[in-house]
Amino acid sequence: MTTEKKQQTILVTGSAGFIGFHTSKKLLELDHKVVGIDNLNNYYDPNLKEARNEILKKFDNYSFYKGDIADLKFVKKIFKSNKIDKVCHLAAQAGVRYSLTHPHVYIQSNLVGFTNLIDEAKNNNIRDFIYASSSSVYGGNTKIPFATSDNVDKPLSLYAATKKSNELIAHAYHGLHQMNCTGLRFFTVYGPYGRPDMALFLFTKAILENKPIDVFNFGKMKRDFTYIDDIVAGIISSLDKAYPYEIFNLGNNQPIELNYFIELIEKELGQTAQKNLLPLQAGDVPETFADIDDTKNKLNWQPQTSIETGIKKFIAWYKEYYKI
Image (cartoon, rainbow, N blue to C red):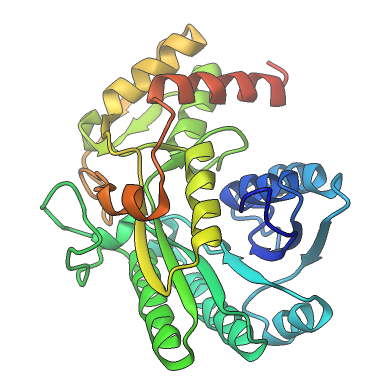
């Protein structure tokens, strides 16, 4: 959303989540109104969610609703109380590993919640619906890099299956109701105010506490780590352009081996990690790598942040936030 355009009201779900917080903050800085929704659940430290939300509350053009998107009455109330121009749906139950043990949570949040939101957007004549998908939809694909034209019918986790389902539901709503639906497949997002269940956060905390870290696939895994500011730029471009029906990869287009990733953290912290080397975990894939040609062309988007810079920025934030 560019600054020259008129102020719009954007509904951002998961506004106290990692990506939702950074997206909301950027939209507010661009002088848009943000209606934020979050259930502030305890999947990870709710204090971190509260801290993000407190930053957003300092903006006059931010209004916040605490509740669950799987609750249709709650969702209807928000659409009724606000004149919303666009929906940016980033709320979801995240995490591949958690989906192995808590399947029902994913169905409620990622399927019931998704349907509640897209259906209410339709009922309120909101045409533009941007939503978070995930690189996990590529499942066991062996063709590298992953392109949005690849078949994604073989998910390796329930989390991935729910994200693929979101893309299918959006396609149906686009066809039936002429809604503009854009799905964004995020590739391993990291950065300040990140999620404590993700590798960068877990490793930093453990190394500082002199505790061992679990290194899956013996450190040979590769991930297309993508810095949060780059992700936000892609989201905002998607909101701006509002294509009829598209799916884009938002990835750094440069997979990094886990061992090198750990080396960078060690270097920034000035400490060595104790590594607990383990095989690949159920539901995990050995490599993720985004083909972003289509994204570059249609969203005028290019990742700007190297892994070295990104980790440096994260660790600076971590030390300040946790007063180390």
